[in-house]
Image 1 (spheres, rainbow over the protein chains, first blue to last red):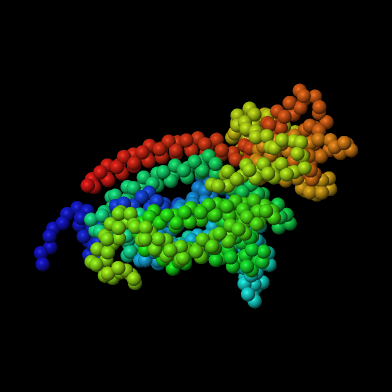
Image 2: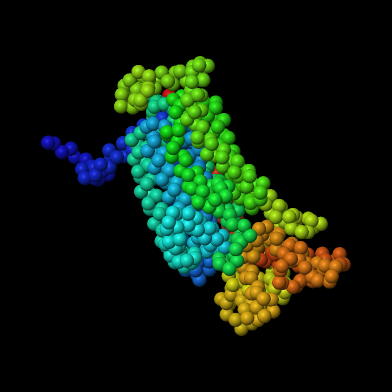
Length: 425
Length: 215
């Protein structure tokens, strides 16, 4: 064997490559990773979610250096961060705004998946790991919200931990076990802090699983079919630059909130130290929980409300089973599904508003109707998607859809393992 | 984000549902940020509020740093250390005896109420005399705080205007106390957004440049 003499940095790369698959990894996952060239800007939000995750971890670690998890000191330590720590206000406002940004980005990411049917085969596992990530994110946000130890922190945690009373047989014990005490107190605060620190790392682990699955099945795209090889381009540099441009736009919006209106995302009552003796007039969760909170309040029975709320978050996981349509292009070529998609978003907004306002008999009724619509829109999908597909075929598909289906059939003939049951031979 | 739009609406609904339909909803006031206005507010606050209320997150040194007249600060702090917080002059026990509750700390007052500075302003000026000769407050009828500014007994328009100015200064000081880094935050914000605008437009051009390589 002749060893070629390699000089300079390439020698170091070669030394590493002999011991670790660096070059092949970069090639496989970045410079040679095939990405559909027709991705729209709606495909930027996964990258943005990753960015916000890193931002939250970094700001969070620096905040933890100054924060004190102790009922007598938490509130003061936040003010210490806001007033005395160098750029502490910036760290804290980035972290508190970052929580909202995280949910906004994730909700858009999910809405894109729903609109374009990206949850369909072969990407079910991506959707389900994503669902797991959403649950982890919600748990992390909920526990983090207790840490400033304001009135809304305390009462929010009290109301939500109280819901576990709905657990059959051992409800009382579960609540005490979660709180570490009979009421939300010092034991709750310290454990929420410990878990709020731990969970982001679990999220990072789950994100790795999400990405491994992504790099196995590759990105979905607006056409809804697997594109031919010629329509795929390397991730780097095309999508690295597109993601960075998207990041710039995101940071512009984010900075407006951080520097100019950071308090619009902080409930005024949370600037009053927690007081177990005084209940705020109106306990509201953060905006990102409002639709689910409205569903909880819409069911008169507590156990039923908890089940409905849990189910409302989990309903998304059923989408790969519920949506039976094979029409490519997501909602774009499916007029009925598209209308349903927008009505669902509207319903979420209605639920969010109902969750925000103090309950009146009228708002409860609207909330109940919106809750029925929420679950109803999932239950009708199997029927609508089949009927819609039949109707579209009968009416005659637009030529572009015919072309997509033909192209997909062609691809499938080349890659039989991608074929699904019932595909046209 | 949605809450941004909902909030004013809710404030409006909450305030109008209170039993003072004759009064308008919260007047939206703009606090002043000039050293002069904040100093006047501090002066009023030290005379009218500080005997009962603390501002435990503000130290005398913070007032010096902000640029308030040193002589005034010396007079206020007496023999207390420069790093001492603005503790109230009243003990909690004495407050409990007089009012039945400890007056709240004012450091975060303009952040801790729906409506913010406008709420505190309307509250300070919300005192009035009922026909049975009892002083009450439009915004917060259960309040234990007496009408410190004396707005309820003032009918003369010129005097009322003077009290309004006084309340406005106090609220300006409180707004500064609730968020002493606000000015710095805005200033940095303009730079950050300016920088991001340039960076993002450059990224956009680079993106188009790179994508133009594709056929």
